[in-house]
Image 1: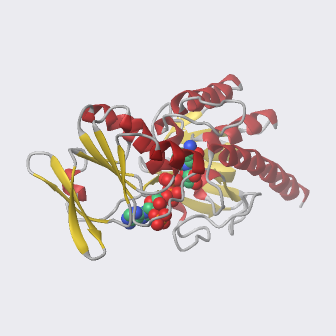
Image 2 (image 1 turned 45 degrees about the horizontal axis):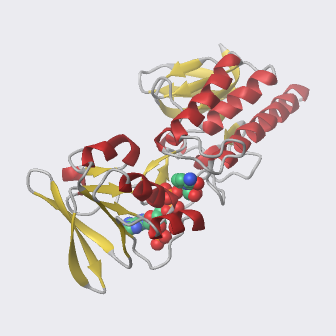
Length: 306
Ligand code: NAP
């Protein structure tokens, strides 16, 4: 079967693209690596900046988006995409299981994954005290001491969430200015069991049977932060491996694409956290999904007219 568009990823960008594709009467489907996905939003405790849904938890917001796409008849295909191949009239999508899907256009909406620190002890203790998901693993540290690393919205949100469970939260940031939203910084500053450790560069995670400490460097001197758990929240890396040889990427690996989602490859579009943009939020991801479908429609109409 030749689709009009195949959407890779079932986060807010991909699900919104599905909603708009359905309304546009396109032959389309969403490809997802794991069943019932809704992307990274599922791991956010509370979302205060998606218009109309103040205070909603990220999991519920993701479910609402997915239900909307399902109500409009979206088909979800479970595949891990490993590569794309340009063919006459469109694209072949290659999967880990060896399947080949065909579509006139492709929308890359496969988002990003947590970035690693790449410090000593990180790999060794991952899953045994080192975590990249406060919402998933926070409960294991109830009444304990944890360190959260990072200065962005994820680190601040994670610290606030963990402060409700843990006895003590050390928020470790490498600079003395946070890049997180003002409201989150204020909240953290007024939370008694959050201690800010600024201008501190993580250098090592130590443990015996489980994690016992994070070592940071401040002004060239090493300091030990006692911690039973270390939550790494230092940003994300785009999931663009399958498209690396196909579309132009920036130095970090994001697909270079304007608001229209058009990439350097014909008939290939990018939407959501995966593309170069200033603000990575649910609201911009959903907007990207809508714009990508408008671009797909224009592309298909133009191709038909030739
Ligand atoms: P981010 O904004 O890129 O912040 C990453 C943080 O990690 C920065 O403070 C950075 O420090 C620090 N960092 C990076 N590499 C490091 C290293 N090797 N060692 C120590 N620290 C390091 O990432 P994010 O917080 O995951 O947010 C990603 C996007 O999602 C943002 O656009 C954010 O606004 C959005 N988001 C929004 C919400 C919300 O609105 N509720 C929640 C979560 C995420 P520097 O500041 O020094 O560079």
